[in-house]
Image (tube, rainbow, N blue to C red; front, side):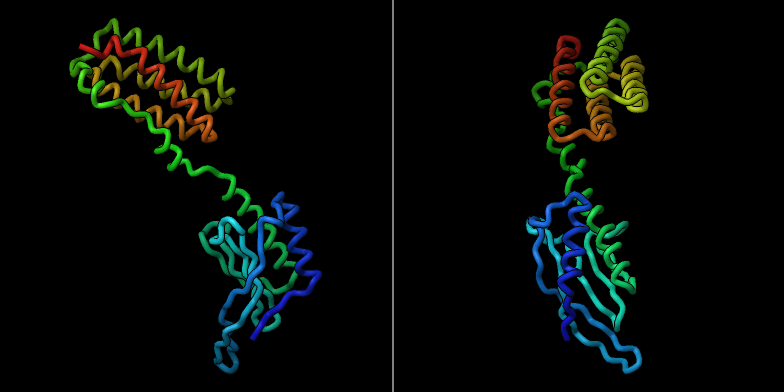
Length: 232
């Protein structure tokens, strides 16, 4: 069996993509398959149907199905799951499903993979440096200097990224945590702790890849300023 769409229905899908600020030229039509079960007769029939796929991301699709006289669909991504299937009934509700899928797809395409970006711009101290860091308690004088420099770093982050009040409070809280830790940790333990905290800050600010790289360089410069404190 074969399920087809009307020309006006294809046009509805075209308009829905544009409403979601997606470029229809980035998509292509193909043929998918699904099994339509006739419950009265207990027969499962393989049906060919239209499927809309993103050209560059073939795993993202919307498949147009028909169960009896009611429209249904299978799509990826779903609203809350990777794949979603639903029997919606009317064509109007099918168009609404396409609209939800389009907006979810746009968000998926444009959202950076924060875990990947975090790894890409992961801050690291070479073994040559870490091997030379003193494994002893941070002196009170050095702890005071660290606290002062952390406060300046917070000002710099706020200025560069125009933080919201909530973001600034979060950053300041983490930097204060590091300042207090400097009074209790060894030099080496504090360095490794600070790297982890800075990663959390970068993730929480949901920066673009370029902004994350910029923040990484800023923090590296900040840590380099402490080399005179950390060496033997």
